[in-house]
Length: 397
Ligand SMILES: *Cc1c(COP(=O)(O)O)cnc(C)c1O
Image (cartoon, rainbow, N blue to C red; front, side, top):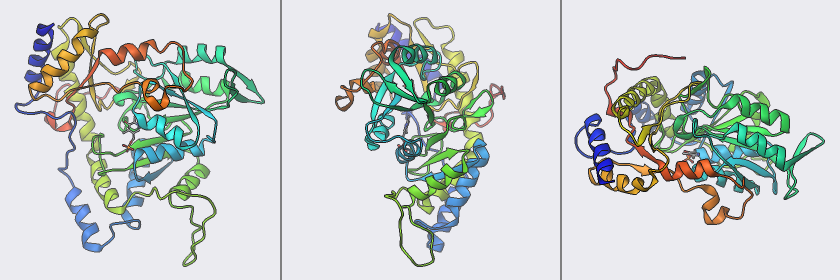
């Protein structure tokens, strides 16, 4: 047991630079200073200014989404996505139990109830086969609307999360949503720069949320965005996130209870520079992943988590997974690596075990998520950990 932890720590030391290595650090080596200084010099730091429009246009161009709406953070983006997906008080929203708490919280902000489903060992995202079988057992369709037979509540949406940047298997999930009359929303907070069968994650669902928190692949300090291909939803998203004010030269009139969810211009300025650097970050992170993959290839008992075959992942946060039966080594491994100055951490505590979500509906078998939780650790993943050129990074589609 001591030996596996020691061996893994040694392997990590060989791949990583000397000294303390953070789990994920931002990198500012492009136009960040110039753009932020421009905001300060001109006084346009807050809710008005050109960088917000520019940031949204850059996001749409990079992802291929028709519309991008910047928001104050990813959680706010997700909240508005769910509102616009039609989620109302006392609806249920299917979400993976293996996710960051923001996914569940956004459902709660709508007055709705999260309904937890299991994940796949291949993608770390919602398992389509298991979800389909579960829905066949659990729901009934009345007038094209999906109802949970046990609770009587309407199931309005499915939120798919692309865990650590690895795309979930979206095609079968979309098919399930069509068949059961459920709206697909993507929590793409971790997957900017990740592609599913050549299409950017966050462009297949009706609405998607991105995050630009300090630990994400690009950061605006704090920030988020909503992606959609639907012009009317995009208009509503902008309206709702900007206090639902009716545009007018001097009149302050609002036609809905909106939110102050806008991204300040100074944060968008940072984001514009970060998006310019994004393709380089993805290459570096894929290079680091290749290094890890090669370094752990020969080792038994644990494996490096690699992108699903249909994906080109941003490898936002790299992960090692202990083979089943080796769960007991996890905590020793976390201790040994952190003691050696290599920051590592376990997966999130599963949502259905958090106090406030304990009583929510869920699959009776969440075995894969539970097993992944006991076996997974995240390892350092900053783009700055490898040189910009790496012979390993080929475009694979
Ligand atoms: C980061 C993250 C969010 C929330 O983003 P914030 O910008 O921190 O509000 C939502 N979901 C997932 C899966 C995340 O990783």
